[in-house]
Image 1: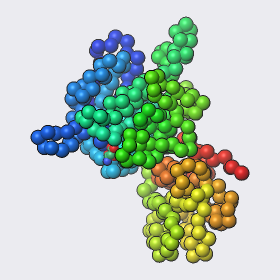
Image 2: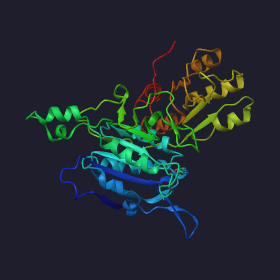
Image 3: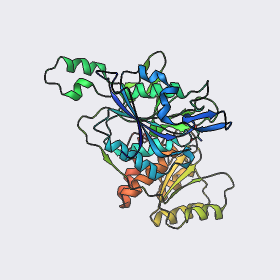
Image 4: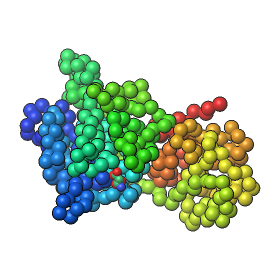
Length: 378
Ligand code: ASP
């Protein structure tokens, strides 16, 4: 493996409960205060046990892999999402689950992108980070990281018990099925579906929210899983990757007073293939003819326009008001209750892999990885 790798607990356990691959990408979590330099500097994860001796108390094996370049997540890019997806695929058979340590700023984008890129995922991929560096006394890094590891390693104990008395049970069944076989964000006591999460707070510890989908778990004295909302385990599915992402996409956030030159300069960008139109309320936009004509011309040129509400909660219902009916009539695709993070990454991933416009419209309009509830609401 061309990455810096640290093995934790490899020999002290004779029957490890699980093996987890941790991928460290950077972010605030991995900083320590350097007294000499009087500043926060990236923490060398080779010395992780100095900061987190508790890791020895976990009854599973942990391998920590550090990406070659440790980044603030504001520098995250599709090429790194591809790298993360490939690391997961290359290690898919060897590990039971994956934890990605990531800066909080763009964590919801990475979680959304990976949810579309990892096709047939049947193991946990849990992203976490922290608002305060691991080296700071009041840091939230310890709790976030250790609980993310616990969730990644959690298996359905009823299935393990049944397999123990079933002589035909396979090794996999004996080890147990993961409780959360999907891409998630764990932060500040809550497990969220990754492609439903949004960073909504930059100062408090409760950095993430999922307004349109229930929490998948709550970590208190015990970790309580909200099982009806967790994607079910699908046995014997092979993992495949979507790694061709099209970055000819953008986001246009509407505001009262937006001018024709501004809209035109964005919508008529050369090579543009997909646009997230951040509309008001339930998916409403101005009905000025210059606005609708500009959008319609772009659709006629083949640009996919995806209607996403500026509201964190609720949904786009095209046709509820006259101000959204027109968008529906000219061919804007409703994003229903999708987040902007999921919408823009969904455009990149599906524009990258599909060129047929009607198939593309169908992929966008319907849930692919649990990112939206596309049932029509009346
Ligand atoms: N700027 C940091 C990052 O996203 C913030 C954090 O990790 O909380 O990498």
